[in-house]
Length: 252
Image 1: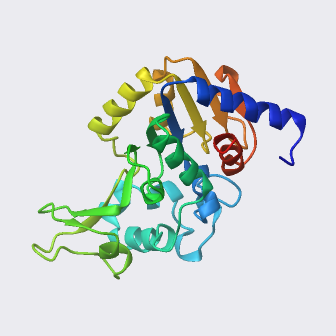
Image 2: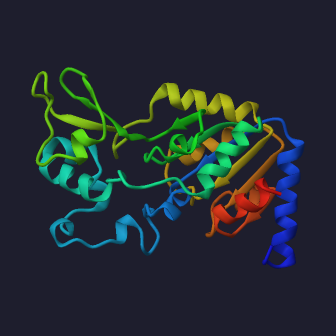
């Protein structure tokens, strides 16, 4: 495999967990999509550490907040277009390996904090998007639905073709709550799974990160390059790129 014995042993252990279980839930974050070219938020090269003169006067959280959308919509949409344009982004090996596990009947549900839609693009059918999707947009006034290009492919404040209302992305902004239906569905699936694989997330975004405490199954696997609050409770911790880990484990 080209890695040391400790890594090989962990891969073998993960493979055993996968083979022996009946139901896996995968809980993922920004690290799942970084190999597709989408930056995460809080690493040294992440979105919040990218300095743009036109936005330096604002906190990153403010620029993706409900307050900014309503009080400074021009600023909100300009920042959103610059940072959330994923039209040319493709799934990476992590997305494809998770889709493969689903097809094999091992993976029941993906619970993702990402809004890029790459899991579905890779073929996964059972995905809970905790924070929504950039591919869905809607009018605040009449509710008409629009695709990604309605916002990303335009300039200024996007408005509805029917009523002239502002069209906003169907994503959970700062200061907004999670969708109750998606939240409850995530909890239900976590409670009935045998194995929970947590990957590509520092578990620092709440309330999403708190969902892992709903898991009552047998094994917790944590795949992340940095330390997380769940390391001490995990049955297996692998600090390697998640794409390489899943490629080794799923294709064995």
